[in-house]
Length: 83
Image (cartoon, rainbow, N blue to C red):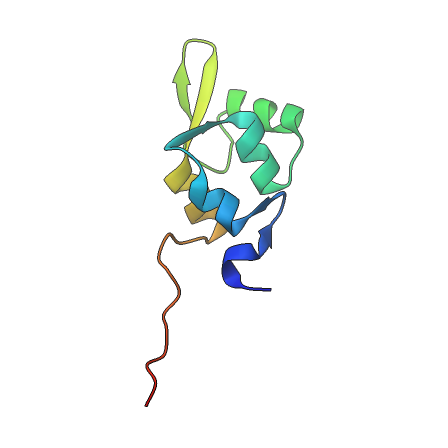
């Protein structure tokens, strides 16, 4: 399986790279392999594994933080030059 198609918890690496700048707790929780309700509990307790932006009653997770926690970089894999 190519790196771009590898699955990280509930999302493929391609899915993670295609996410917008911020995502909801449900999407981030799916990527982390935790339930939606546990994700919200962690966010409310300020124990979510990524930075959480709170806007009123809404929680948003910066995608760059989510990728960092999951070890996913947005750089293309290095190619080897033909000799």
